[in-house]
Length: 254
Image (cartoon, rainbow, N blue to C red; front, side):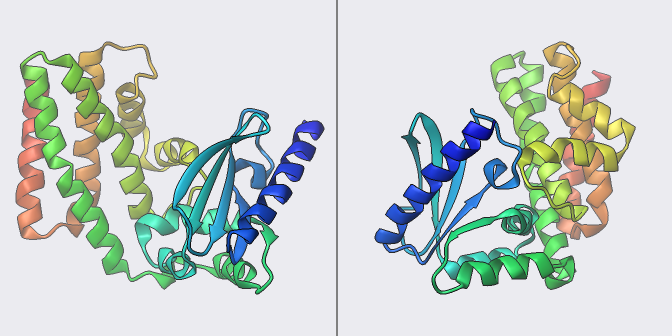
């Protein structure tokens, strides 16, 4: 592991110089290598602040490297967008600054360390959660129709959409910060209780169950999540969510 750390250090120092030459105002190491919990197969996450080609993947020294260019103002905006703050804030808290001649990266990191949920209007959080849960109603209907038609390829796809999206939405609703999406599932499982946890595990096929049960578990996840966030919904959204929940419950009885 020590040799792996030395290899990463050499690689990121060399890469930060390359990105600085391309016009980056700052270069930051994020992710598992910044936190210190990476292994030799972990990708290396590099942020470059400034105008650049967006997101690219490269193989450097037989390592997978992701390079993301971000405008500096967008990083500050992320601290006020609930769906982005949940992962942006902890990422910056763990960040290792590689190149920062103007001090802008250090300033952003200090902001992240001092950040609290009070920086985000609670109404914005509720609005995001309500919009997302309402939007998933369409996936619920598609899943039930696919199950009824025994179209299990489509059903598996829609099941996966629900199983993967719902915990992310609930993380915002519960104000849970996560350093990696790998943390979301366990954190939401712990906070939502046994019924939701069991449904999520089944929807993600963690318990060796058959596909029909897994699809139903995803519908159960939606129903539980909808009840959890119901008070944030507008009257029109409640009509949509109520419809989806009824469809989901009827599927269980058929």
